[in-house]
Every structure is written in C-alpha cells, then in structure tokens.
Length: 275
Image 1 (cartoon, rainbow, N blue to C red):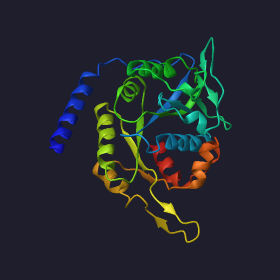
Image 2 (image 1 turned 60 degrees about the horizontal axis):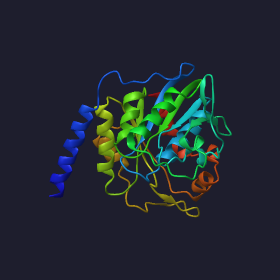
Image 3 (image 1 turned 180 degrees about the horizontal axis):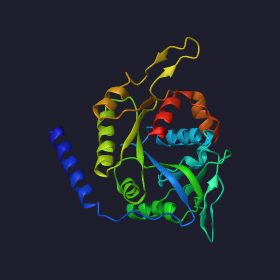
Image 4 (image 1 turned 45 degrees about the vertical axis):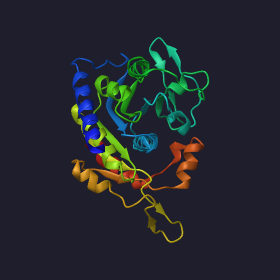
C-alpha cells in the first residue's frame, strides 16, 4: 500500500513540473552584475548539510582565486551569514542592493541581511518567498562574479522550482546523508534536475564517518556509506564524503567558515569546477 502511495505522489509531482515549466521565465540579473557560473546546492530533505557544503565550496573557490558569491535561497532557514560571521545589514544604492562580504571577500545575500532581527522567523507564503529569491538575483548588485553558489531550501517546492526556472543554473550538487532513505531523497533531487534540463555535477555524503583522532580508524556511525553505489545508479560521476568533525561545527558556530581547510573535499571541488 505504501508503495502505491509513493508512486501516486511521484506521478503527481511529475505532472506538476510539466505544468510549471513555461518557456521564457528566465530572469535577467541586475544590469551591473556579471555572474559567469551558477551552481545550486540541493537536497531532497532538510538537515543533511546543504549550507555546510555551500560554504565549503565557496571557500575553496575563493582560495583558488575566483571571485565568489553565495545566494542564500533558504529564506525560512538562512544560515549562511552566521556561518561566516556576517551580521550587518544590506543597503540599497542606485546600482541595486549591495551584498555583504565575509572576511575573505566572499559576497553574499540572505534574508538575514535584510530583516531587523535575524532571529525572527520569516512567516511568508511560498510565492512570496519565491519572489524574494528572484529579487536576490535581479535586484542585487553582484558586480563581477566567477562562480555563485546557491544554497537552496530542501525538497522540491516553490523556491527550488523558482530557482531552476529563473536563474541560469549551470549544474547542481546533491547533498545526502548515509541513512537508509537516502536513495529516495537523492532520486527526488536528481529527477527534478532532469526535468529542468540541469546537469547533476556531483553527490556529497555528509556525516559520512568519524575518524578517531588517536588510531585514525574511520567509523561509519550512521551505517555503511552508499554514496558511490547511489551515484553509479543515477549516473553521477563525482562523489565526496564529509566526516563528522567537532572542529568543523565549532568553526561554523563561531562564524569562521572562511578558515575551514576541508582537504577531503579538494578532489571533488576540482572535478566539479573543471566540468
């Protein structure tokens, strides 16, 4: 019975995508902006680490000498500014809304940089949230950007659909965890991208293992990794595994994402950016 419901839901989602894909919905960026590449970071559910992957990829791009930006499209759960210790307020000029920058120069725009109190919840309906994300692209003066990473909200609702339809997404990175339901979660994100004709650049498994600091043995706390098998099943050629590290959580909580090295993401980053 549960399998039949799952199929019905999948069919309903497929039909919704087909109805929601009119031509010519692509939005023009701010006239003063020049963004060369846009990469979306997505997942089929929340709590798997999209914002972490977004932050780490942006930091690596910035260290590689690329002019880097982050568009925080997770309106109801914005965490990018806090991860980088950015707590100011964006302001408008004749050229548009000015994004704020991290200590290393990564440009970013998030709803938390526009509200009076960043701790207050955003109680907006889906269409209003989707409209705000579109404005982050059309009204913000991004200037010259080599690569922009878009931290998307989880799932396949209004906002991810809006981003796929209105922004010139060059590809997506799917983020998952080692849990049993991961294949279904990845499937939803991959199928959404396929329907929007957007390539899947890679699959990242967060919380993949814990490495003992003394013996260096790796322990898979949430079960054996399935990232390579799932990537193979969906034709995804590039994968990465992010360990559970107390230092990463500490740096993010303290607003020092700029200072995380994340060597285990180097090969993944290089392959994605070369593609």
